[in-house]
Image (tube, rainbow, N blue to C red; front, side):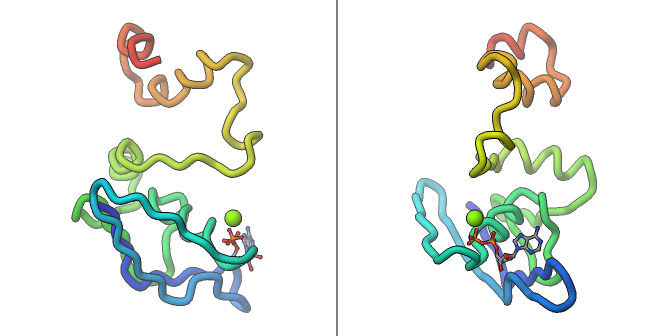
Length: 118
Ligand SMILES: Nc1ncnc2c1ncn2[C@@H]1O[C@H](COP(=O)(O)OP(=O)(O)O)[C@@H](O)[C@H]1O
Ligand SMILES: [Mg+2]
């Protein structure tokens, strides 16, 4: 379950990109979020695993409020993954194997487990 409650976010003081967005996605639900260019879709998504921290409001993952310290982020990011829009931001290793291994290696899993997951 993924929930955001009244989140507000400004990139700078003159412009608020998110003006109080609330959303709830239940387990097993598939949701398409539609909106014109610049509506704030990417800004909202980047809040769903703590890449951005809202100025106001909360994000909940499986009912637990998202916290922004390093340890909490590591935990929540194993539940919520984000695939970036621009492939150059997403895929950077020379082979698929190395690219897929990047996440598990960063979790400091043993090599055997990394290979199993890849
Ligand atoms: N890094 C940024 N710095 C300043 N403004 C930004 C930045 N990213 C997005 N914006 C602005 O925030 C608004 C929402 O953008 P965005 O979330 O990318 O919209 P969408 O993904 O729906 O096209 C737009 O007005 C955009 O210009
Ligand atoms: Mg976008």
